[in-house]
Length: 327
Ligand code: SAM
Ligand code: DTB
Ligand code: SF4
Image: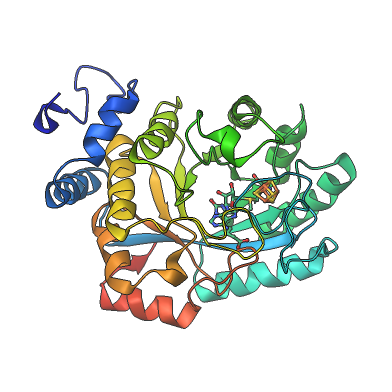
């Protein structure tokens, strides 16, 4: 199929963007001439969003380290010798104080992450108070606690949770190279539970795992074929952490990263596409190009979970320079 033969929307369908994207179609999009791709993504961005608005989410790690899963990119896994220690869970007042600060800094969403395979019921009870109290501050709430058991998504929803983050991370046929302790199906199962509980879905992935264009196309096709599509789509660029199996991964060229953002925008026109981990290692011009190509959300705050994110003051200055304003 020629690049120009790609149609981005299927106008005859009531939800034209929720079509079945093939990996080959997505790969063709990724291979469009760079300027053409960014231009088309920017056009679609303008059809569905105010292009000058950026959504700001602040992350906090409520339970750091000691995770039993073996994700090859993650410094928090017990399977890898990294500088991250197994810490106790934060207390409810500590989390609420951090959320108050995030709100004062201008974030609209507060995302609580835990290094769990999934929450034990006793742990979940503590997180419910966090969700309730963060929500009461007037922030949107998001949690990322791993795989959920029956009933847990409903309890989170009832406590006031708005979003659940659960990434598909990479293409289904690459998953086994990166993670051995769980299967792609397990992730899809939790995403189903989250949807059925009435929570909004935040689901994206991570690139720079020595992935090929076909792998990236496989990830985007999976995300875009979720029905309904995720409301938020974080695109993480691998932060290489010493001691993880991917510490020496081949860096992804910045143009490939921008292409991934652009294709996420084209295939998921109504979703917030978040330029996520990896911004500390990215120059401002590349970030600006990501915003032009349709990224309209960032993690905002000096830290991601365990690694650095740009300082709040630097991000404010960047948004000012680009005439972008927070939602
Ligand atoms: N344990 C939960 C889980 O895996 O769903 C929640 C936290 S986990 C750290 C959330 C996401 O962070 C992962 O799905 C992955 O996309 C991203 N991530 C982890 N380590 C990363 C790294 N070194 N660089 C970029 N993104 C990373
Ligand atoms: C997501 O997609 N990225 C965030 C959030 N969801 C939880 C996490 C990025 C983690 C980067 C590595 C670290 O700081 O430990
Ligand atoms: Fe655990 Fe999540 Fe890290 Fe995987 S990505 S090791 S599940 S904290």
